Length: 172
View 1 (cartoon, rainbow, N blue to C red):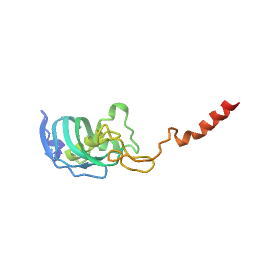
View 2: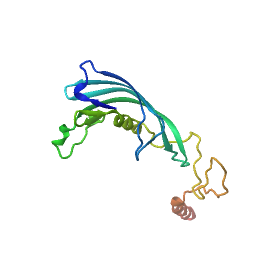
View 3: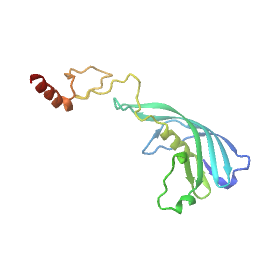
């Protein structure tokens, strides 16, 4: 949905949205996103608060299987006109500006806002389940499905040299 900034009334807008948002390379959205938004305008700033819910398809970081996850996102963003940063070649956001966005041509696209909020709320290491066992580091079998017969060494191969040094110290 496109919101025309100049048409936002002085008392603000209350929006209840159910939007089918297209996926991109960063996220696959598998259900319509439901959002409850409050949009207020102070001068050229647009303040958006509310919440959004949607289901995304992710890949488990342990077993690499695709799975779906519900994402609940709180929204608290301040939008400024993009012309404010066009004056500077490089614009670095400060700590208090991390919830800042920019709009162009007096238009704000809520689809972009909702997609961005879903992406920001994806866990760093998504897991299909808390008990996911992952893949065997030697043969690659999914340990959630079957048990492999690989010999498990207690010592990380990268640290084997240190064990040899300890053996030499004990002999002296």
